[in-house]
Amino acid sequence: MKKLLILTLFLSHQLLMAQKNDKAEVFKLDGVSLFAKCLPEANYEVIEEVKASGMLKSARTNAELIGAAGYNKFTYALEQMNDLKLKAQKKGKTLEYDGAILDGNLVQIIKLAQGSKGTGAGNNGAISIAESEKKTEKLVFYASKPLADYKVVSAIDYNQGGLGETMRGTSSMDVAINGMLDKGLRWVKKEKIDSDFDALIVDWRMLRLGKVRGELIKFN
Image (cartoon, rainbow, N blue to C red):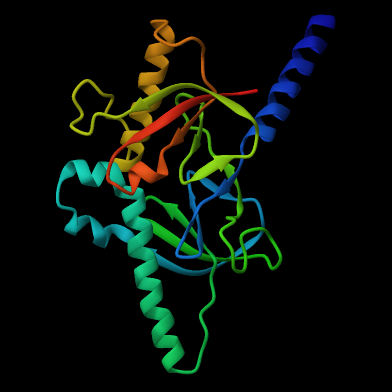
């Protein structure tokens, strides 16, 4: 009975720590908070849905597609929304939104609850709840930065040609993220890095340049 109690308390502590560490501030693009591999902490209303598969047809190379797929989908959806906003203005109407949620090839354009962080002018993004990758159970921070304190275990990148990399995932963005997570676990197993890691932060600045890099981190 005592062992069961200790195990229950340990699991409860682990759950609380995971919930504490999964919060992040998302980045903004053209004043819109971006949610990829995460969902808003605040309540929200879906204003419009944009199929972002159209941008894939114009990708110049497979490497560019893998490297910046998420970024390209966001920019494509926001361009479509800007056109709709201009059309609404010509009719004397307003189209207001302040967030975009990426789900595969679908981008949901959303309006966050009034007064929540990330609404209105300014560079501060909304607060999100990060997702854990199913197989590795590691948190993923994509276009976002964790709110909890952490240390960097190691820098990591993804070979966009796929050579020597895991190629699992239902989208090019997932393939790149999963590839870095799987590589990180191989490094842990082979003791190529000092410790295990809790999460992956994908380098948003490099993604915008079409490259896939990131950091494996451990929360303090």
